[in-house]
Amino acid sequence: MNAATTSYLARARTDADDCLIEADEPLAGLQLRCGGTLPGKIAIPELLALVRKTRKYGLRLARMVHAIDGDELIKAWVEISPHAEGAVTGADSAGQGGCTIHLANWQTSPLPGDDQELAASRQLEIDRAIAELTSRLDPRQHVLTVESTAPDLAELVQRMRSGMGRPWTDFVVFPGNSHEQPMHWRLLDGAECIIEGSERKWKAVLVPLGQPEAGSAGFELYLVAQTPFIAGTGPRLARGEPVLGNSLGSELSPVLRQPIARIIANAETIRSKLAGPLAQEYSDYAADIASAGQHLLALIDDLSDLEVVESAGFSTAPDRIDVADVAQRAAGILGVRAQERGIELILPTLDAPLGAIAEFRRVLQVLLNLVGNAIRYSPQGSRVRIECAKIGSTVHITVADEGAGLSPDQQIAVFEKFERLGRSGDGGSGLGLYISRRIARAMGGDLTVESSPGEGARFTLEIPGEIPGAE
Image (cartoon, rainbow, N blue to C red; front, side):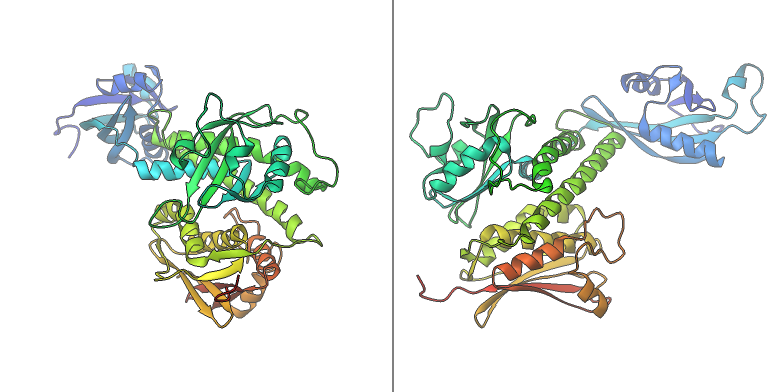
């Protein structure tokens, strides 16, 4: 097939700077609608990349390119030929060093809508990332635990900790709402609220726990600010206050966390095209920005956690938990990440709850680290299995992957501080497993690994089991 014998829809020419010198319709119109000019730099990202390759390597290339035109997806088959040196003369000399583009096919279709469940999962991940208060609630929405590092939420944290066992709605104000509280969780999820001591507006995010009835095992509550905290405004805690601590890391964490989380949220909005159609190349750029922000935020969280677990008075708040429910929650949080890598998460199938005595939030934190590592370091298309069992007086939660495995020396080193086993570019801090083992031992358990090179790894969290009939 060549230009002399093939009937083409349109033809275009570029120069040595990858500018469109001339173009027929419909390519000319798309160039203008993508923000370009004619003549001017190619404004269609995939076409620009293909022209650059053709010019750089001097090869004739043909393939399908994609572009977004308003609310339509364009698919076009293009054939691009480089201009040979000295082949263009006279009136065509402006095209020397450029390319000739032949358009052989042009298809339009409506932009595919984002899967609603996937979009909801992404939004929940964003809310979790930027939440400035986290609380665990029982099935009646009564407060069980509360954590926050936001300076202007210090008073709220103190009130909630003093009022454990009361509905969380007793501690906030819902403007214009006179209904008896707490209302059904679906009506409160996403509700705007006002908090005494904070000048910012807040949104409540409620995540139901338990199956099959949503909320049967309680709720996770996240308070998300609608505006970032500005240093120097609002009340500050007295030195020595345990909510924030008095170390440099604890002071910097809330200051850095909020702007980074906002960057992640905005990048995710761009990546998922929630704000409108966008060329795939720029969506990929936004994904890179979000990924880099998440890595930085994870590092900040790790450094903050490191400070906590290495403090002399570090302890956990043991409670009766169902480890299968915690495993389900961890898999739900990381399900989108596993899906993106084509990794299947296999969850425990227990006929009855498997009780343990440990702090729910800390067990979830350890499992998120173990499952997240398994997803990150496992080959695409493999499986990650979560298993739960009671052995003697302890409960074991094992995360098994099908990755490269660890040598005996690596199995020892992997729990050391800042140890990443020579990995680079994956965004890890080398603190996750060190922190997780410290947490496990603080709960009266341990974190161990079994592995062989080429046979994957099995990380097992051991925690005290619930004693039958104990009150």
